[in-house]
Amino acid sequence: MAAALPRKSGFAAFLVVGLLVTLASRFVYQSALSTGFVGSSASLANERVQKVACRGIDKAMKERITSVQKTGKLTDAMRLVAAAKVRRAQDGVEKARPFSDELQGMIKGLVKKLKGSGLEQELPM
Image 1: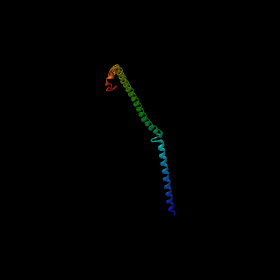
Image 2 (image 1 turned 120 degrees about the horizontal axis):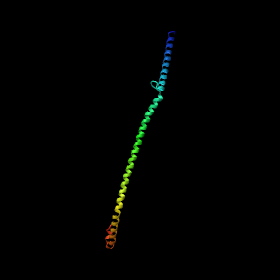
Image 3 (image 1 turned 135 degrees about the horizontal axis):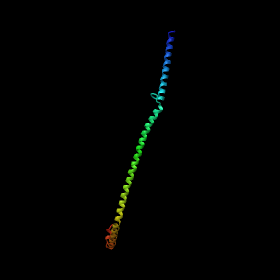
Image 4 (image 1 turned 180 degrees about the vertical axis):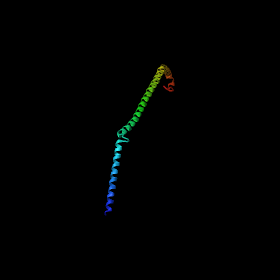
């Protein structure tokens, strides 16, 4: 039985050493997470990652703002072109109005002259 006692104490020592190694490795792992590599802190690493993400968002936001501004400029230019076309069309209608009035007067005069002849049924007016 004396021989069995040293085995048990050796086994118990092995378990204690194994437990200590596990706890030490867990402590080292946790401390490495909190301090980062080579003395740097994890908070600085997180800030760097956030800054990179913010720069990416800032860049996308700036691109979106410039895109919207360019679209606004194009829209304003298209409005000016459309307004010029409408103005030109209105001027054309005003210039054609006297001719149209004269033509309508002539057609109405012809209809009055032809009223008794029976041809007024064939006229579209």
